[in-house]
Each structure stands twice: as structure tokens, then as C-alpha cells.
Length: 218
Image (cartoon, rainbow, N blue to C red; front, side):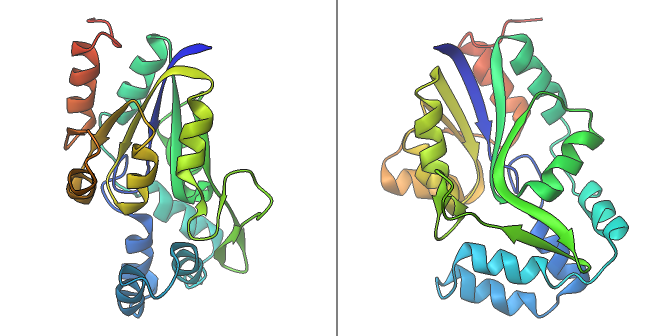
């Protein structure tokens, strides 16, 4: 069994803005109404994202540029390297799509990071999701079941840390050894009685892991 792993959500956790909002603001103004239906539970997360991502209608070069423009927590690339230098494996766990996440990681020179997400691909001027119901991590609502992923990783690692920011992250947080929560996730975990460390940035996460001995002082 390996020592430890750090698993992070992407949108709103690594990134400062969800990619679907970037798409809605630039290409799909009617998407704001769709957000309300999604938030109220009228439509599933995966159906919401599929609708938004097939409403872009741009050449792939433009879509890739939009992905590269996603603002991220500036400390993330250095944090990932530090985790790896201290014997930890880093995973990105997202209910979005690996299509734009991979472009962002490449932009910042991040290596040896496994992205566990819904497969996405470019076709006909849009991003399409390739959801496989036979995948062992399949979720009918999210496309990927983050809880199953964390439970699976717990079989491989002595310790699994998790960072997230919103409702989909409340489910895997139940199984992680230590949670770092941003924004709405703090309220949800408090309501559910799930322990967590409240944070606003990866600088704070790094300090906490250093204090707990997972990261050695430079």
C-alpha cells in the first residue's frame, strides 16, 4: 500500500471560476435560466453540462484558448510538485470533463497527475461528453461517482486527502481522511457533521499539510 495521495476537485477548487460559467457568459446567455433549473434539481448535473458544452459553437482553437484562460489558484502547480516531492500522488477528480482540464495542466507544466473525470471530446464546434454507463465509477447524476473513486483510492493509499468546494464534493468527503473545504462545501459538511479544514487557497492547504508532517519544510 502506498503512503498518501491528494485528490482535488477542479472547477472552483483548483480553478477560480467554473468553466461552465465561462461558456455561459461568452456563448450561451440563456444558460443562466438553465442554471436555476439545475440548482433546483429539475435536471441532472450531467445533462446540464452536456447542454452548456454543446452550446459553444466555436472552432476548437477558440475553445482551447477559452480553456487556457481559465483562472486558477496560482499556487497549485508548485503545490502539486511539492506533494510529489514528498511521496504523495496527486489526482484531479472532476465531474466536469477532462477535455479542458488537460489543457490547463499542460499550460502550467504539471506532470504525472491523473485526471479522473468525464471524458470529453471536440466535435462539430462543441465539447461532447462520452459517458460510459459500464465504467466502474459511473454515476447517473454526475457522470462520475466521486465517492466510488475515493473509496477505491483508500484501498491503495494509507491516507487520502481531498479538497473541494461544492455539493458534488460533499459525497466523496465522507470517505476521505482529511478534507479541505472551500465556499459552499463548508456549509454542507457542517450540516452533515463531516470534519473538514476550512480554506480559501492552496497556500493554506500546504501549510496545514506541512504542520501535519506530510510535507517537509524546505
